[in-house]
Amino acid sequence: MKRRTFLKTTTLTAAALATPGLLRAASAKTLRIGTITPGSHFWTQTMDRVGVSLAEKSGGMFETQVFPSGQLGNEATMIQQIQAGGLEMGFLTVAEFSNRIDDMSALFAPYLVPDVAHASKLLTGETATGMLDQFSTLGMKGLGFGLGGMRHLISRDDAQTSADLSGRKYRITPFAALRDFYELMGVAPTPVPLPGLFDALANGQVDGADIDLELAWKLKLFDQAPNLKTTSQMMFPVVAVVSGKYWAALSDAEKQMLSETVSEQIDWLFSQYIEFEPKWLDDLKGTGMNVTTAEPEFFGDTLSKWAGIWEPKAPSIIGLRNEAAALM
Image (cartoon, rainbow, N blue to C red):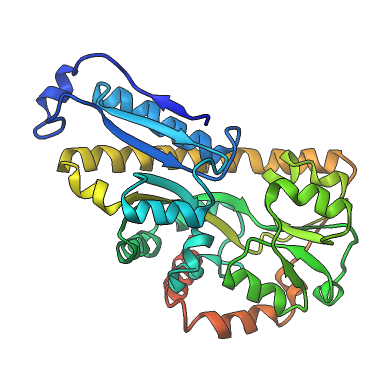
C-alpha cells in the first residue's frame, strides 16, 4: 500500500520546548489521513502540505501519513474508521457527510456563489464555520471546509434547455440533495466510479456528467463528451475532520497547531482553484469542445422546487444565502 509519510527526525526545537504542553512525549504522534483522490489531485496535495508543515512546526513530533486514492476504502468506510478511532483524520467530500447530516446539504444549494473566489469566502464565513460543530454528532472534530471547484455539465449531446435533459442518464455523486436536483429535471442520476466515467461515456452507459473543470480536463472526458455547459450551479466542498478520540488526546497547543496548519493549507487549496479554474476552461476550449454558458434560467423551475424540498431540511441555507449576498 502506497502512502506518503512526513516525519522530521530532528530533536525538539527550542520553540517547541518553550511551548507549554505542546510535546509531552518523546515519541511521534501518528496522524494518518485518508482521501479518495489520487496523488496528483489538489486535495491530496493539500494533505501532503499539512504533513510537511506539521513536521516542521513540531520538530518531528507529528508523523503524518497520507493515504490517497481510496487506499483505506471508500469514504463511507473511512468515516466509520474515523468514528471508531482507527483512522485519525480524513479529507472527505461534504457530499458523503450530507447522507448523515441533512444540514450539510445547505452547502449544495444552487447558485449560492458564482465562482471559486466567492466560494472560498463563503466556506470560511460565519455560517459555514458554525456548521463544523455538527460533526461532533458523528464523534468527529471538523477543522475546515475546502473546495473541489464549481459544478458544470458535460455531455455527449448538447442541450439547449433543461427539458432536453429529461430521460438522459447523468453520472452524479450519489447523495440526496444532488439526486433530487437532477430527478426534478427528469434526469436519471447514475452513480459511476470516477475511474470508470470515461468508459461509461464511451459505451453510452451515461449520457453526461455533473463534473468540475479539473476532472473534466484531467480525466480527458472531452474525448467522449464534447459538449461543456458552464453553469457553476453548485459548489463541491470538502471537509477536514479528525477523530474525536484522537482530538481529545491532544494538548491544547497541539490542537491549535493542527487547526492552524489545516486552515493555512486549505487557504492554499482555495488559491489553486482560483488560479487554475480559468486555465482548465481554456484547456478544454482548446480541445475543440462545444463550450457554452448557461444562466440559472436554464434550469427552469428546478431551482424553486429544490429549495422547497431542502430549505426545511437544511436550515443553514438561509444563513449561507445571506452571507453570499453580502459578498457580491
